[in-house]
Length: 91
Image 1 (cartoon, helix red, strand yellow):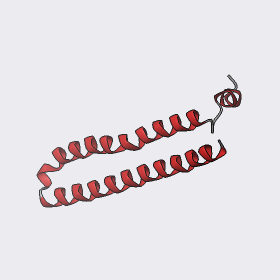
Image 2: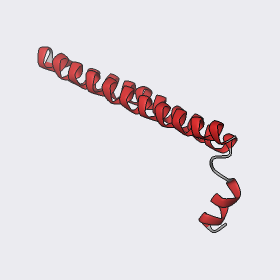
Image 3: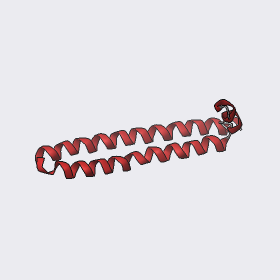
Image 4: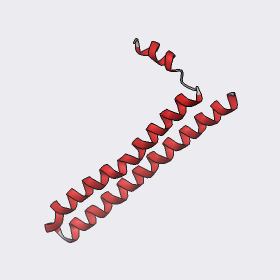
């Protein structure tokens, strides 16, 4: 049982780390391309900015989904005890 809990903790760490790194790289590349596009055609800045913010929200959705799956794995594996969490929060 301890092996399963330990492997779950490692898997959750890897999952969250890769999601964060992937989102950071995606936002960085998108921001760079946005600046290049605005430098080439300044009159398109408003249109490009709207599309950039929409894509930034979609790119940020991936780490949020990864956090939700990681929390599910943590609670399902027994690594985090819901009763202990309730006591910690004072409920």
